Length: 498
Image (cartoon, rainbow, N blue to C red; front, side, top):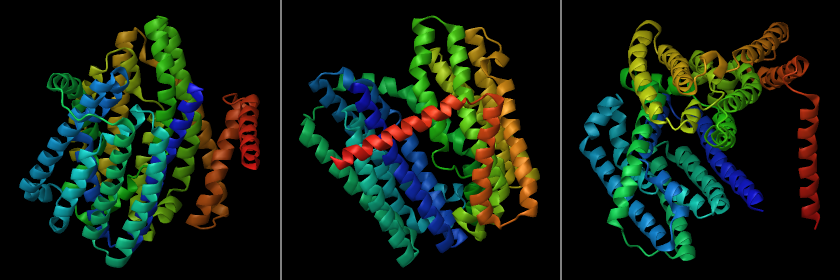
């Protein structure tokens, strides 16, 4: 029963998060067509500022709730919640105050004077995002993940409807972010009221426990900072060095397709407990490495066909998502897709299993330095596409750096940590399918949009057919998947009848 409940909560939470991601992609599709490149670029910069601050400023406090909550008695749980609320409130006030004091510097950093007109309302939105950043973790910790998912779905629609309307009626980002602020504030206040009614927390801080909590948060906060810089350095660089219009072109090309990262993270998350047990309990290093290699192949069998489909149909994807105003984003999109090749696993998870996660911070810091050097060199010779090339180069560098650290602590050679031969076969066989369809498209070209809907699925289907012939996928696996789907569908139909 507990397992069924966990699965139900996980699915509902994923759907809740996914609905917000998909609706924001739909908004980007609308805004990129309705707004000028300058205004759209400013919107993307404001989103980047909020993402940066809500990722960095809470400094690991939300994760501390997940870590401590279920191991505490009722009184300590109240203290944990109180400590977190007070800390997040102080941090959010400090953050907004700093934004106002450094307003001119932020505008210079993002090379966009237009930000000044929207800075006050952006500050309010940042305040809400930072202050209530802990609430999702708290809902999961108290076992209300299903309720959280439902709330996220309802308010994602509420949020989306408002910003579409504000954009359509005014084209003014102050009204757009004003609605974002109001809708998020209402959502979080309702969530707080529902939590308090059910759990009746006694709001009393525990200063000694707060010290312990903050000590736990410091390394997490450092990881958040270096991760953010490493992942968004290209966008920060382009925003600072080029025009807002050029930033809009770049950020659309460097976009992440929803749910792609979720595939890797989901597989890695499911595998993490088993890998940890093999290494720390069973003392089976070889078994742990072999199991990890197997998860990489499973992820590659899903991601590589999608990679080839998106690469073949990149013109149609950009045209479909952002219109012909952003055709210059296509080369950047093609380069950015390359990160899917190395993105078949979460390398840091193995360092967590080995209890050497501090080396992840070191690896991120080294990669940031390398990225800062490469991004300056590549953009000077290639233009803004150089930032994407630098990011991909650093992804590969980071992969081998992580593999080197893992090899040190497991006594394994790098070539034994990843199934390089099988991965190459999976990638290149998919490339052969894509090359054949590329030739077919030369003679049967239906236009970029239709090509995407025709040749994209054909690439995926062709890849899975080849994988079946090569033995990477068994017929029994396909039958099992269809059987489980059919069984679940029929069971659901029976439940609805009764």
